[in-house]
Image (cartoon, rainbow, N blue to C red; front, side, top):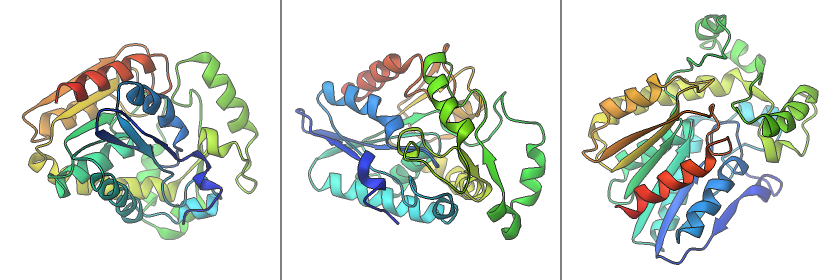
Length: 278
């Protein structure tokens, strides 16, 4: 599931304070979307690790085969390895990665000292998504259809920052489903397979069932103008999670990819403040 090629963008940064953070990128994404945050956390003293999720950064056919169970098992393995070396381990994730962090905190409460949930995605209800997505919900239960449909990533690609968006747009517009480019390691998949959306949907239902029993401290950061997932997602998580220590930060100048968008420095600052306070 993990190739030498897909390992190219894994990163591990050794810190100085004896504490570690596991970062989890989003489904169809890449560790590159977490690297800026990882470097910021490392400057603050934290050891940081982020690995390519199973079947990612490879072919579209391989990506379609991934299941939420494979991703979750992989993340749990990363958590356990960090816990063998550090007494305090925190887990942070973007989009579906945020839900992975919550589920890990539920199953391994003694191993997860805190959660950073970035643009948590429980509902695809952002302002940039097409209205016809209702047909997607009606058909993704049919294996033939969900394995055949690839949704091309569209404007604004989760980014409000025009400079970064322009770079991604050039790659995404030229990408062909049968001819993946090495740039997928940098920008993530230019296509979102319906099969992956379905796995996300299944995992969301699992996470919703355990929210009230999650007690780890949590920081939730979400963009008010998130193009893929509205602030309703963050509010839902904040209101239902069982943590007694929780905070919600809304960003005013970003879209979905908050770890690389216009307020990425604020994301780092809020994350460091949260972790240092635990």
